[in-house]
Length: 304
Ligand SMILES: [Zn+2]
Ligand SMILES: [Zn+2]
Image 1 (spheres, protein in one colour):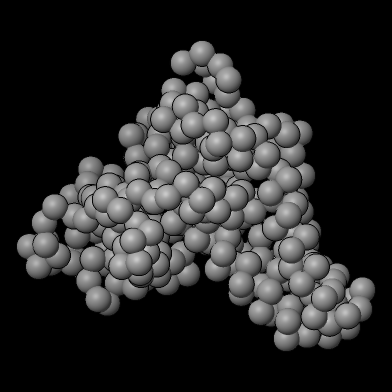
Image 2: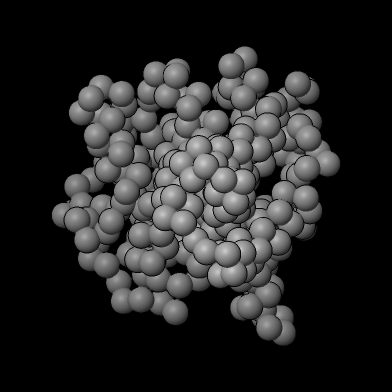
């Protein structure tokens, strides 16, 4: 724990960067190739889907809407579960994630934004170099340091500090669980291996691309009905794939809102989960936009 104002780094510094970035990039094609040659049991596909759903919600429901924006409150065991599931997604420590995303909202598409796709504007191939920077390159340029003060609220909680400090073992658990499930269901070493490859590494790769697409695609392609002072866009494809996070212009307009898809035709799976949690009293102080969707400006034509 450092002084306010100083930079912190997630623990397991040697695992931040190339090792955890390389594992899914190498593992994904290996998973597909092995399945093509030796077969793909149904349980491996189910393992992929279950792990993608669980770790995806760890990011969208946990890291993003609960811990970054405090869009709702819940009981501590649910906080712990969501933070652990987010760690299993393999996007480094939760404090780093939250601090980086809060910085994105403070400086969106301006100086200080960690991953704006407009950093190369006006330069040769600026659009596509910007896309790559926002998608993945920013991690190389920005690194994994974060200002401790940006997550002062989370750092006051010893339970959350403990989970953050162990983000890497949680990530490994997220690889081990589908391997163990595959081995138990199929009964052979191959079932465990294909469970590890599909529910672990291929799932890690796919979910990473979806998270990265929220940073790149939804600041480049889509509609922007709200004047948010940045280039955030609403994008249906990312809205579906990222459990509602693709309604990104809505999100920049109402960052505190637990609901990102504001109309019935803007699917928002994460909001559906929060809605159910509220009904069964697992979510409290659920924050909604301060205007009714019918009072919002009509959606604008798509801006390419
Ligand atoms: Zn954004
Ligand atoms: Zn946000």
